[in-house]
Length: 218
Image (cartoon, rainbow, N blue to C red; front, side, top):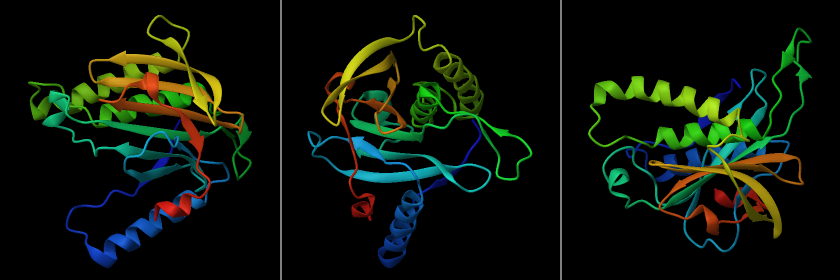
């Protein structure tokens, strides 16, 4: 699944009005989505923030991520297990469909798509202990291919099944753990797929709910 990301994270030098403008632009990206967004339910009372959206070749929003808890760092505390975060990925459930110019077909999305996005998201904030900086790109490429293979085999031995609440309704999710954190993926009655990844927070205790007004994240 090839998409382009528009990420809302800004460097530390952006301050004041510039940061507020960046936040509004990120919210506007999320508002362009023709599908509802999901996050952790009200049982989670910690900080939440928008990360960014992914778009198709025609510019339409296909998926996006919302972070909950600590801001993960690629190095340092991650190896020591001090971070506590969950990132929820929402992806539109699209069947195989024609491209805007009518010349081809766009790839369908599925629960596997959500599982892959969540798996890659976890890798993006992971740096194995004792790994040299020059080796990480090779490691990341290899692990990304592995994440895709795992996501394409949700009935395989690497996955188990969890029942978690989605808008208070018990819903089945595919779930797997690794030394770097956990990944899960499932579908909602509202026609979207939900993936999530995290570290330091138990996947067994999370629940999801539709976000009523994404503009409140500005």
